Length: 319
Image 1 (cartoon, rainbow, N blue to C red):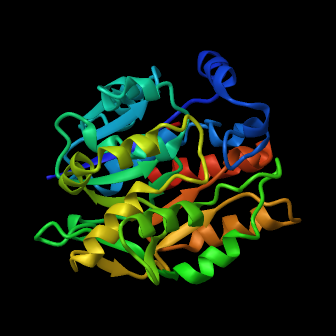
Image 2 (cartoon, rainbow, N blue to C red):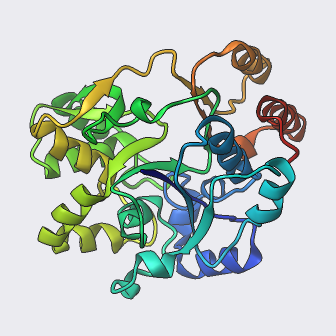
C-alpha cells in the first residue's frame, strides 16, 4: 500500500496572507528564499498534481493534502473529471501534523511542514511526497518508487560535501544575510545523519519515503525535530528531512539510487526572449514521467494560459 502526500498553500487567501504578514520580518519578505510572495502563490497547480496522480498512478491507496486551515475544493473537480471513480482524498490540517508541538504554529515553512508529514494519522509506511508544483506526465508503477521489500527508489545523484560547503560561502540573499538554498539545507541534513564526504541529492521531483524510518529516528532525536520545526520561515540552519532519511538509509544500503536524466522536466520561467516558447516546445515532445512547474506565477498571463491549456489537454481534464 502506497499513499501520496501533497503539501499545499493558497497564498492568495487574504486570511493566510494577513497571518503571514504578522509573523514575517521585512527582510524575510524581501527574500524569495525565505518568505517572498512567489513561495506562496497559487495558480491551481494542486489540481494538476491530483489529476495527474489519478490519470497515471490510479493504484495509489489515498491522497493526503496538507494545508493551513484551507481547502482547495477538490471534491467537485474530481467528480467532474473522474466521474467513474478516483483516488480517495483527505485534507489534513497543520494542527493535526503538529499535535503536541503547537508552539511551532503557525508555520509558513515548507521544510518544517515536511518534517511532520509522517505524522498523518493512518499514513502508509511507504508514501510519496509531492509539492503542489509537481505532477506526473506518464503512467508509473509502484516499482518505480519502491522495491518489493520497501526500499525507496531515489531519483538524483551524489554531491560533494567539501565542494558544496565552499560554494555556500559565496551565497548571500537579497537582504545581505545568509542565503537559504536547497543545496545548503540538503547538505545540513546529510552531515546531521553522519555523511562526511558525499551525499545523495534527490532531484526536484516527488520523493519516495518511509514513514517508519522518520518515526524511529525522530522518536530518538526529539531535539533534532524540534529545532527544525521551530522556524516559521525557511532558515539556513535547517535541514531537508528527505535527505536526512535518505542518508540514514544509504548508510544501511537501503536505497536504490537512479539517475533522473530524461525522467524529469523542470520548468521555471526566466526573463529571456523566447525562453517560454522554447520550453513549451521541449515539453510537448518530452516523454519522461515527472515534471516540476516552479514559480509559474512569474510568467506572463498569456504564457500561464498556454501552459494551463497544455496541461488540461495532456491530462484530459477541465480546470
